[in-house]
Image 1 (cartoon, rainbow, N blue to C red):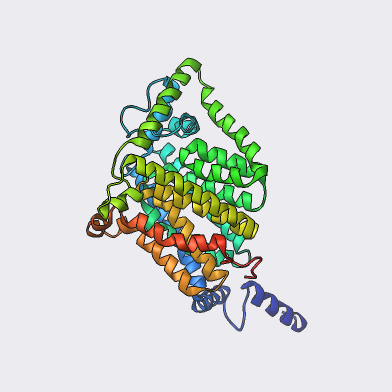
Image 2 (tube, one colour):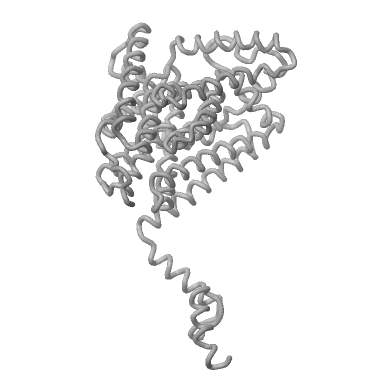
Length: 417
């Protein structure tokens, strides 16, 4: 090597990690750089990388388990039977409150996965669901923490897993519903009205639970209302693309009766009734209906104040959280696995407190709620002692913080992060 080229070559080698530096071979230089970078990892770097790796490995293991035994720990067989039965014109809803408890639009949307059969349709369904949720969480941290999005991404995913692991394992539609609702929220925050309406319409087509956020957003954002009406019309018309429209209308009637039975039928659920029953209060159906109506009015009032007091982006996130809390406490069919929605919500708030506001005490308290929401993951002894009542109680514990976020500037406007 010519003497005058050595400094240039050395500088390039140091930048790229290639070539001979100070007598080292290229592989030795790269290995040394790797171990130096590992030793210099901060706590935030470690949590960020650990969260992403654990999330990926957890979901890869699920896909392997599904490939090995598609019907173990899975609700997907109900979706497949519903989609196949819809096109055959058979009663996919059945008696009682069990079975296919979705709109006909979901049977249509699930058709491509049903046609693939098991295990590949089941694997693709879970991949789409968890992929959509991962993307939604990434978009959220990019919007609210643009300068520290990767530092926030991993911890948020970690906080979802304790409560959300079972929903991910079972392939529940709640995962994709959550992703669509969160993406719609981000579109509202950015005032992209047509994408917001389309995502909310698609979420409603997937599960009627989306109606809470849909109605709340439609009532509080005037540009969204007309677009939502149009999207809902398309959702209701979609199942009529059926070779026998008369059979489709008949099935629509069966669906409405099923949803009514589901809303009024008794059962053991993880909503507010699970907590009330645990403390010895047996509320009548009339009292529960009144409670739901009063709570809905309260949610609308608090949401109105949030929209008019808070930054646009924070207000949209507050509305999302309000709708999730209402669903957890007031939906007549809240399951343990539905709490993946609350874990994601609290996880986002926890990371925002930590990374955006640097309020570590509050962030750790919210993170503790996420860990406690995973009671079903800590063995039968803990689960049996806390089933039905603990999760709604934790939701109530989160509510004061959420209400404060709606009414007071918990998250500052355009906070530098």
